[in-house]
Image 1: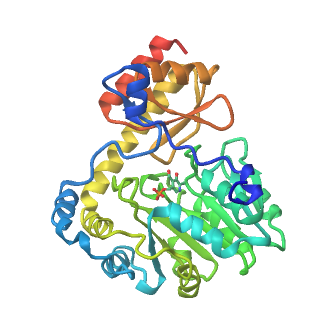
Image 2: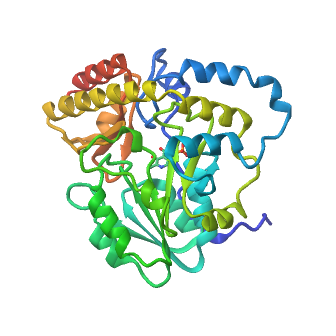
Length: 359
Ligand SMILES: Cc1ncc(COP(=O)(O)O)c(C=O)c1O
């Protein structure tokens, strides 16, 4: 006899994070390993942020203020959005999952593009009665017409990942706004903007202004990427106050830690550093894209901090890279790898390893 877990849990593949540096170093007996697998920022948090964290260690005996007042106020100021429309959480994973728990259940469905961020699928299998996956178009972009057609009477949530993970592609702002206009007010449209700060395409537009005005749009953002705080777990969403009141009913208390709040508030003060990191990232994307295309790979146009590239034998390349201390991410479908921008040195190691493998 064993404890009785839900039998349908068997359908869910656990989220598979990129392999860790320590793990690959041990398996291949390599001292220096470059991790280009998890779309992290290759740089440490800003020095002022590290200092702010260090200055708050002594207060860790106290629970955080569950309303996250300092971060909410700082975000309201930074975004120009009223505080009552801001919802903070333990990074976008938590916000996305709570949305699913609050809006899923028997007799519901969620619509999302595929391939896209894995948590929409996990949430759908665990919580919604059905996850309706709409294939990306031939340019690896969300097919908004097909997504519109896929929405059913029982659909309560539509996820739009813009720019999209794992492809790095974006849908233009005008098209996304038209799509949102065409969706019933009863359906919540979650626009996941985890990579928003990296996007530079002239036709890219955040849906934040819609989330600040309408009742059925929720935009999620994170401090994990451009702000280099993936290890601290803090993010936010903008949506209608009534939505936030519902979502907070099941949010775990204190999910934004004291240090996460302090770090995020400090990070927002350094938009000059953000701009410099974006510029570095754009150069990294251009270098990765051109280098891979020159070696015969197909590479999707990326508005993020990673590229999605096809290889004749992606599995061989992936293993060859691991053996040489470079971790990338096998992506869906087979044949594609996702490679995050690293430091200049890491990019050089990546290309040197690739040339040795001979793809
Ligand atoms: C599209 C997208 N959304 C959300 C996340 C989750 O980020 P976090 O929970 O660190 O904010 C990721 C992480 O890679 C992502 O790619």
